Length: 112
Image: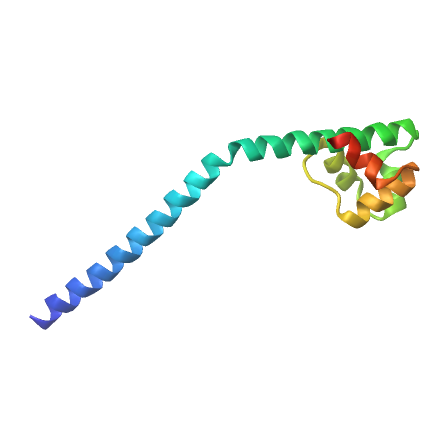
């Protein structure tokens, strides 16, 4: 008798944990689905920032490798910034603006 009551209590606890985890997963998925507009907007901003960085680099006739060595990052990082895969940190953004001979505001103004 005691074993069956104990098993029922353990079963109820596991059921509650399972329902709680399932609820969290559903809420996370719903939040992700509803954030589609935000994700699309971010990808447009990233592309335009990357395009602005690439335009300034090519206008200054610099290679990605030269830019990377000058500011102290990898060439792959510069490539990711220009492709819109990632964004440069604030300090790297300042270094890029200085290297290209423009202000940070000018770089970011092109994004808007």
